[in-house]
Amino acid sequence: MKAVVQRVSKASVAVEGEIVGSIGRGLVVLIGFSRQDSAHDIPPLVDKILNLRIFEDEQGKMNRSLFEVGGEVLVVSQFTLLGDTRRGRRPNFMDAASPDMAQKLYEEFVQEIQRQKVKVQTGRFQAHMEVQIYNDGPVTLIVER
Image 1: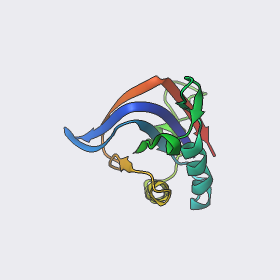
Image 2 (image 1 turned 45 degrees about the vertical axis):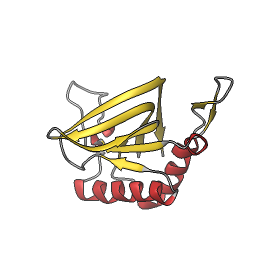
Image 3 (image 1 turned 120 degrees about the horizontal axis):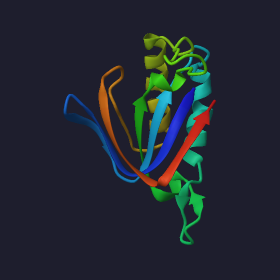
C-alpha cells in the first residue's frame, strides 16, 4: 500500500465534468494497492494518516492531527503509485493489485476512515478523474505500509 498524503485547504474530484467528491480543510489521500496488500494492513495505515501531526498549532508549528483540526479526507484511488520506473521509460505495473482486489481494498480503506468518525469523500474507482487540489503549505508526504 502506498499513499500520497497532501494537506489541503480544499479539494475536489470530478468525473466527466461532475464533481463526485469535495472537501474543505483536511487531507487528500491518493492511494494505491499492491498484490501483496491485504485488509489486515488497512487499519494501521489509516491510523498513521489520520494521526499525522501535520497541521499547524497556534505557534505555526506542525503539531496537530486531522482529528484535532476537525478536518476532512478526500480519497482517490491511484494504481499508478505502484508504477516501477527503475528500468526503461514505460512504467511497469506488475506489482499493482488486480482491479477486483484493489477495489475491495479501496472500499475497506474508505470504510476504516468512516469508522474513525471522519468525514470522507471519494473519487470513483477506475474512472478518469480530474482532481483539484489546493495544497496547503505545501505539505505532501508518502506513507507506505
